[in-house]
Amino acid sequence: MEKYYQKETECAPRGKLRELQSERLVSQVRYVWEHVPYYREKMEQAGVSPADIRGIEDIGKLPFLSKDDLRKSYPDGLRGVPAKDCVRIHSTSGTTGKRVVAYYTREDIDLWDDCVARALVAADISEEDIVQVCYGYGLFTGGLGLHGGAEKLGCMVLPMSSGNTERQLQFMQDLGSTVLCCTPSYAAYLAEVINATGVRNSIRLRRGIFGAEAWSEDMRHSIERDLGIKAMDIYGLTELSGPGVAYECSAQSGMHINEDHFYAETIDPDTGEILPNGSKGELVITSLTKKGFPLLRYRTRDICILSEEKCSCGRTFIKMSRPMGRSDDMLIVKGVNVFPSQIETVLIQQGYSSNYQIVVDRVSNSDTLDVMVEMTQENFSDSLGKITANEKSLVSELKTMLGIHANVHLVAPGTITRSEGKAVRVIDKRKI
Ligand code: DLL
Image 1 (spheres, protein in one colour):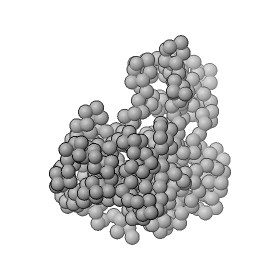
Image 2 (cartoon, rainbow, N blue to C red; image 1 turned 90 degrees about the horizontal axis):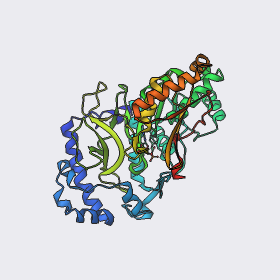
Image 3 (cartoon, rainbow, N blue to C red; image 1 turned 120 degrees about the horizontal axis):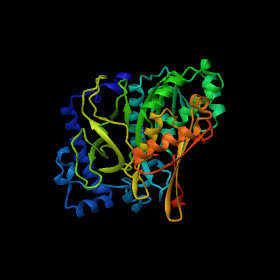
Image 4 (cartoon, helix red, strand yellow; image 1 turned 45 degrees about the horizontal axis):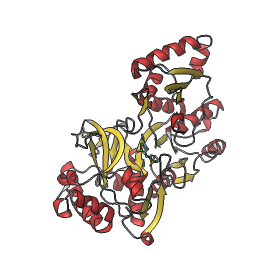
């Protein structure tokens, strides 16, 4: 089984892979032209027809799809098959407008499971493993996505879904889970509870498959240390199946993109110009095989770098760096661009944990930026009596990074609400 997932396409010479991508793109463009009138119209407006797409080198001729297109075509304008041929839907949380609904045929689910199974094999997981899935089940793709891949690989799956930490830990100990799948922020919380309750020695975890939100290398190291596991990154989005678009291997230096199913480009987010691999840009993905919801040139809004450098694991699939924030993550505070990741970088560099919250508000027509920062147990006991000095030093570091003043509030360990799914780091009260 391992052989099947690892070798056939993942390690193919790049020329051969390009041929396969070309063939698949040509037939996918024809398919979309015939089955998705919304995209056909976009192609007509751009003056392109399927005859113009003869291989992957022609992909730049195709128009982009954006989140805005998904909203305009809600609920089923981009579906590629009649409802009777779909076996499932998933949906995004819809916090910023209308939900996005993605459709899956039976074959789409099968290919998605393959993509996730590959991710698990790349993390050295096999049918011997007991996989505890604590991503949410339901409309969110995390639960059923990891579940499908792990089951396909032959693992024993614990479909826990998110929440109920006490029960998670009970099953983890009683059934001897060896793999944990959840958001990195929930993994960090579980690690905290495991160590605080002294049950670390009765936990058999050895791998973690963490994704769905941004996390830093420092956060990886602390989760690995606290749980005694190897923590692997996994990337994906609902619009393109879910988790498993890209995954980490033993090298833990970027995520291999499942390139036989997804063609990746990076573009300049302002001009749409295609950038050479190696430069930082917005990730654009074309699904080469999906039929229920076949998106071409979808703008993910995630900023990353694609690298063709040879990987020590032997896979030839291109790698993406961890997403460096989303192009729409940016806050504008007092007219200045602020990325939450810049704030996280300062906090981690100064020895604080990844538990923080940013609150933006407007008082008497002027923006305010407050950062609640949770101290770790160590810096809490070190800094009793030095809190004001520490806050002042963080204010000054943040000013250097952001160019504007932020109010810093150091709070005791455990004060900031822990998340069971994606962490909520920013509260923008100007929008409430
Ligand atoms: O988060 C799918 C997923 C589930 C991925 C479980 C990995 C594990 P959405 O809810 O549609 O889908 O959110 C997609 O989450 O555009 C990124 O901004 C972010 N994201 C996903 N994976 C990562 C990651 C799922 N590994 C959006 N690192 C994407 C950083 C990630 N951000």
